[in-house]
Amino acid sequence: MEVGQFTLVISLFQQLCVYLVIAWLLSRTPLFMPLTQVTRSLPYKLVCYLIFSAFCILGTYFGLRVENSIANTRAIGAVLGGMVGGPLVGLLVGFTGGVHRYSMGGFTALACMFSTVCEGLVGGLVHTYFVRQRRMEQLFNPWVVGTVALGCEVMQMAIILLVARPYEDALHLVRNIAAPMLIANSVGAAMFMAMILDKRAMLEKYSVAFSARALKIAERTMGVLDQGFTPDRCSQMARILYEETGVGAVAITDRDTLLAFIGVGEDHHLPGTPIISPHTQRAISQNEVVYADGNLIPYSCTLHPNCKLGSSLVIPLRGEEGQVIGTIKLYEPKRKLFSSMNRTLGEGIARLLSGQILSGKYNEQKRLLAESEIRLLQAQINPHFLFNALNTLSAVIRRDPEQARTLVQHLSTFFRKNLKRQSDEVTLGDELEHVEAYLHIEQVRFADRLRVSRQIPDALRECRVPAFSLQPVVENAVKHGISQLLGPGELTLQASAHDGCLLLQVSDNAGLYRPPSEKGGLGISIVDRRIKARYGASYGLDVYCEPEVLTRVSIRLPLEGEGWAN
Image 1 (tube, rainbow, N blue to C red):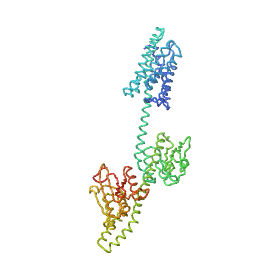
Image 2 (cartoon, rainbow, N blue to C red):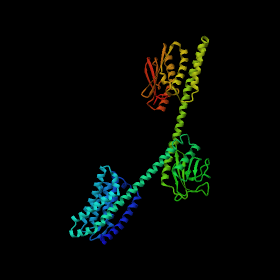
Image 3 (cartoon, rainbow, N blue to C red):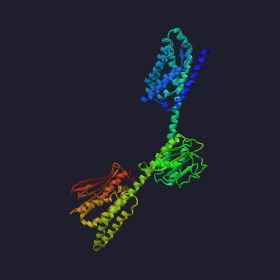
Image 4 (spheres, rainbow, N blue to C red):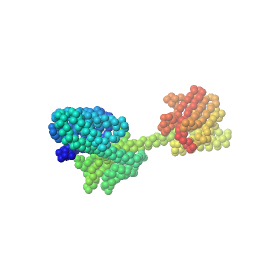
């Protein structure tokens, strides 16, 4: 290589350094994001066109005048525009850079314009090839980009020789600038793409790290506050957040009191003390995130003059209807800056904890509702049945003491099952024992007017069913159906299993069923609602009625219990 060419290479690399510094500054802005991925989005393609057109023009401005022409790095913008944005973007970038070069004149102006357009188009064709081959990662390979830029520069020298006149001047120019421009443009394009690749890697690494930390926090905090927003639970939660986020300290409060504090300043931030921090009071009263960085927004501990905490992020915890029920607070010491990742995590954690608190309240209300419904069923059964049973017992005692003794045993079994059940789920056998006790008492009362048929396979007696799921239905059939008949009443109990479901049927020959809106019993309505709430809308009660002929209540449940699979 001649000395003049070596000097030209050095000069082009000096200009290239300025070029890459500008690119590096651009990489610190959101405008650089569309360059890090292959996209078909029109706004992103427009951003690619504007950015690479600007670099194409800068490459010409930074160029060096050589023999009434310009040795430049314009090809970097054209080639990268095509490879990142596609053929259309590459063509437009090449045309924009070519027209700009043509406006600057010189005997190679027309040839350089044509070559710049061709360079953008070649970059676009390479883009199309790799996309169709599903090898899009190659578009961001610096070696591939450098090779394409090298080939485009060779093409440019050939176009100069073909188009520029006089030919002798063009040949002499190519001999002087070919090698420097081949080196500068190929190396510059590769370095520019390496910068884009580093940006992609950094974004992916940041995203993976953020997602992994967020998932781990979500996994460890799952269900911690479901059992209540209590100091013990809050202390456990604060410990988890302190370990996972790496902040200086974590605090959790309700609207009035500090519930938990872990980290720097534990000696004077004591759980159970009232809230006096103005930042926390502001977050609660205005329902907004309050960030005190210690610089623009001053922060100082209100409890101790020598507290090492220097910044604070206070995030409201929201309950029903968006009302603030407390706060979560993240702190950093004075010697450490508050990272943007922890700020974002803090806001996400607050939403997670708010959801857990709401879930805990919902589960508690659901549990109380279930208990109240069972109590309601118990209260409904007791009054009207007790008087009839006692009157029957009084009559039987005088004529048949042995039958009276049996009746008392059944009555005892009935009320023991009815009053002492604590669980809301029992076996079918246990529920049938409750039903049988009731039916024995009613058979004594109705005598020959009540006949009961049972078709219950022994294998199904271990299946799990909600407590009071069958007895209210049977009682409803006797009370509102068979008791109204002048002739004999027939009651049939059936159980079967198919398609993973347990089907219980209670049938009577009265056919007097009326929809709940008209005359329905409260008991079977509660049974249906409890089953649907517990297992879903596909389960529950179905009623079929032929007036004055038949009423059949079908109870559909999931098949659960020993020896059965859902």
